[in-house]
Image (cartoon, rainbow, N blue to C red; front, top):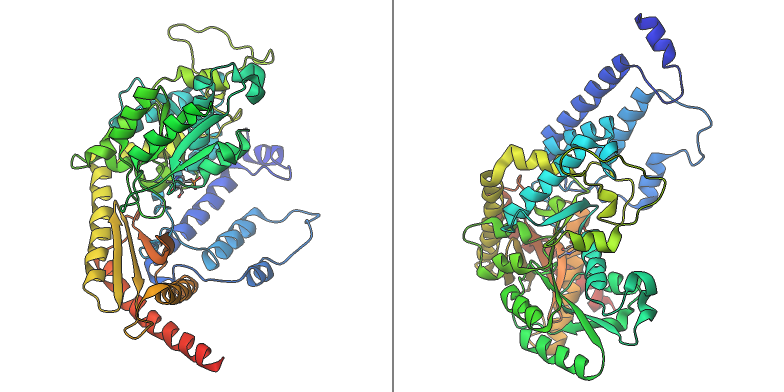
Amino acid sequence: MPPSLRASLHQNPLDITPAEFRRLGHAVVDDLADFLDALPHRQVTSGASPDAVRAALGGDRLPEHGADPGDLLREATRLLVKDSLFNGHPRFLGFITSSASPTGALADLVAAAINPNVGGYVLSPVATEIEAQAIRWVAELLGCPPSWGGLFVSGGNMANFVAFLAARRAKAPWDVRALGLRGGDRQLVAYASKETHTWFQKAADLFGLGLEAIRWIAVDDQQRMDVSELERQIAADRQAGAFPFLVAGTAGTVSTGAVDPLREIASVCRTHDLWFHVDGAYGAPAAALPEAPDDLKALALADSVAVDPHKWLYAPIEAGCILVRDPQHLMDAFSFHPEYYHFAEMEGEQPRNYYEYGPQNSRGFRALKVWLGLRQAGRAGHTRLIREDIALARQLYDEVRTTAELEALTHNLSITTFRYVPPDGPASGSESQEYLNELNAAILERLQAEGEVFVSNALIDGAFVLRACVVNFRTTRSDIEAIPGIVVRVGREVTASLSARRAAG
Ligand SMILES: Cc1ncc(COP(=O)(O)O)c(C=O)c1O
């Protein structure tokens, strides 16, 4: 077909010719390569206000007519580079979002360009098999047998929700699918430590159990679930006529990275016939290390494990994953057979249709970036990166411990918590705690706005602390060395302005 005819066939408001695609794609990749090149020399964030960002965006009204896609792509990249928080920056240590593999970004481009719908096999033959293989590899990396199954979802909340729903269906003593929660006269109850991420409240609320179905189990002085308290609570609930169905342990809590005593929790679940779920959204990949503690490796005793490739397998957002010991439980919870899906029988093993394994119907090809990442770095590459992150968090803990005016609180996995303590603050008691909390909250705000280093916060036994989480293959030892000095400098400035404010009134 002559190029001119081919071009005219593409005269529609959205399509572009393959030649244009090539030209625009090269320009985008060039701009992004420049961005990656300059990344370590930028601030972590511009800290711009919503008003300023909105003003930069301009154009409040829906455009009536189209514009040149090359200009638009260039403008979008410029806007994003100007006013984003760069979680791939070497000094981004806030929250739990990893630096993203550049190959993963290209994988997302490939996935979007081919655009398989990984809801049904006929819609995505090779993508479906790539997802199945990636799921087996993630399970294997974590030490779970290849007979486990699962699927990719958007992130940790969704992965945990899928497990919660599978557990509810499997363990409720009546047919939840047919009768809903009104089918039984016993309240279903679920257990998790007080340090559990808010996915747990959302699940109890959204899936009809109500927040009163939650039993918050106390933690010990290392923020790990108190298993004797768990057992006492299960016995009390049974006695009171409730129906315990699920315990969620955490492998790497969101605040301090604590790992619950998973082996002991597994044993309690076996004894009481409860579904044992592990929220390993953050910490599960560390189970791949030969030197991982036994409690972490015990996640392989669970009925289900949530793990986020966009947290500690360095995949670009979004990539969450739920693994289950028995994939039939996902089918029991999620499979329906609408008449509008007529799929022919195939030779050999019957195809897997992922819409039957989870809540989504149409599904994107998140698996590609995870699969490519696992192939690019292999087990050895991933264990090396995870081990380095843990060592950097340990380095920070040690540096903080030897820095006057800083107090180190915890180090678990790749999370370190600490706070600024001025030499001449209130000496003791609740007044001191209140003062330090106010001071450290103000220090955090300053650090986050200025973007020299980006940390977040945690609350540990009433103490507001700064929290650094290293899930970042760009962070170096010298980035870590710089942190105590930055925090002390900002701490002194904030202390001085707080004192001036207090003196003034
Ligand atoms: C332990 C834990 N569980 C669940 C989540 C929620 O994950 P997502 O933000 O991907 O939904 C997080 C997020 O940090 C987490 O740390």
